[in-house]
Structure formats: structure tokens, C-alpha cells
Amino acid sequence: MATIVGGLGTSHVPSIGAALDKGLRDTPEWKPFFDGYLPAREWVREQRPDVAVVVFNDHFNAMFLDRVPTFAVGCAPSYRPVDEGWGPRAIPAFEGESRFGWHLADTLVASKFDPEIIQEIEVDHGLQVPMELFWGRPADAWPVKVVPIFVNVLQYPIPLPERLYELGHALGRAIETYDSDQRFVVLGTGGLSHQLQGARAGFLNPEADHRFLRDIADDPDELASWSREHYVETFGQEGAEVIMWLVMRGALSRDVVVRHRHYFSPASMTGAGMIVMENAV
Ligand code: DHB
Ligand code: FE
Image (cartoon, rainbow, N blue to C red; front, side, top):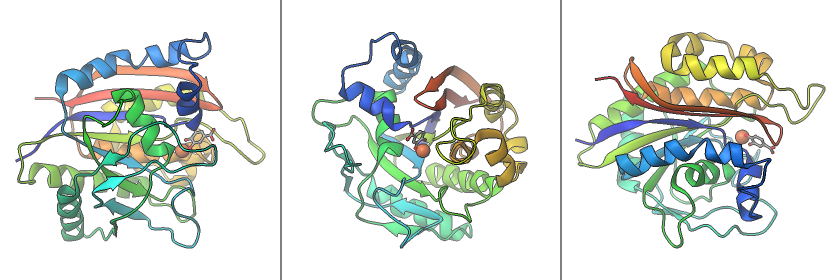
């Protein structure tokens, strides 16, 4: 049976990728942000995961309003990085673990979740940026296979936080019952506080971000009980995408050990958070 080595949470702001593309990593503005990820990268190197399940949302780059799956599971052999309008980025395609994708879809349906199943799609900054933050940019191939879980957090009605947490429980069961000796890591991405448009454009809530980084480890049931509106009020219209971390958290056991945690604000217009958790034994 496969094992879960841990859960990673991170923001996925596109300007992080742009900063790396432009060679800005060690500038005074960006260095403290990227240096905060060094212990997490060391953890990933030590843990040697074979598969990364990445919970993220497409930001109208690979899908648009003509089809909005609430949940979708990637079962593709590989995922090319989508061009978001600034030209192709110099990162390799992501190899998929499609056999697990099908097993996950099967487990979700048996758990009364009915995801869309996707066999061909490109992936945007929601997946690209977290992968580069935790694994660095490889010359020709990523050292880990990916299984994307797409969540609609853009077009209302978005799913309930509680539902995402339950989806995470089913994901955990899918990993535990997968006929493989592979090592899995689960990534929850997005947030933390930010609002990019409307009357509250530029809204940040570092205090709530710090509380979230504590409670996602210690009190996920409380975070799962919040309404969607409470997420929007607390983290901003777009910052409410942080509910996707609940899928990652739900795949872990009730008690976890926090290995690393980092906060930096603002990265572009966003409160940027990161956490590394392992199941308590
Ligand atoms: C931005 C986009 C995102 O998807 C996000 O999570 C944070 C910030 C942006 O365009 O600045
Ligand atoms: Fe986003």
C-alpha cells in the first residue's frame, strides 16, 4: 500500500514564477520569501516522494466559463504548462501518475463524490508555482509524478469548506488503499489573503493568515466549519481559494506534527504562506 509522507500548503501567486523567470530570486524584495522555502525543500529532498497530489484551481487558463467542474481529477499521462499570455515558461511538462488518478476517481465515486475525469489538459500557475517552490526548477524532468485535483473556487457556487475537508478524507483513503509502494505527498495551494479586484482590491489580512497557518494544523475542524462567505470576508474574494488547503489537511491524520511554517506579506498583492506537516505517529 502507498504511504503519505506529509502535507504541504503553499500560496501559488503567478508573480513568484515570473520572479524566477526574470532572475529576481536574490533581490532584496524576493530573497526573504524564497529563503523561507529552503527548509521545506530540504524536507522534500529527505522524504523523496514519488507522487505529488496537487490540489489547485485553474484560473480560466485551461478551462473557461463554458465548463466549470466543481471537482476534477487528472488522469492524464502528462500535463504541459499552459501559456498564461506571457509566452511559454522554461519548465518541463509534468508526468502524470494516471493509474492513481483512476483509482482516486474510483474511490471518490465510491465515497459519493462524482468528479469530472480529465485525460488531457494544461496546468497553470496554480500547479506550476508550488512545484517549483518545493522541488526547484529541473533541467529536463520533474523528480516526482503529479496527480492534479482541480477545484472550482472562481465561479459561484464554489464548494463548501466542509466538503473539501471530506474530499481530503477520501483522498487519504485512496492513497492508503493504492496498490503500490510509492511515497505520496499532498499539496494544498492558493491564498492566503488577497483580493485582486472590486472595492476591496489590495485587501490583506496578515493576522487571519497567521491564525490560518496555526489552525490548519491544530484545529482543521474549526476551519472546515466556516461558511464560504466567512472565507471571503476574512481572506478576500480571491483569497477564499485557501479552502483548497482543507483537501490536503483532510488527507492527513487528525493529529499532525508541523515541520516547517513560513509567512511573507505581501508577495505581489498576496499574503503568502507555507506549511509542512507530517502525520503524528
Ligand atoms: C494572483 C493570482 C492568483 O491565482 C493568486 O492565488 C494570487 C495572486 C495575482 O494575479 O496576483
Ligand atoms: Fe490563485
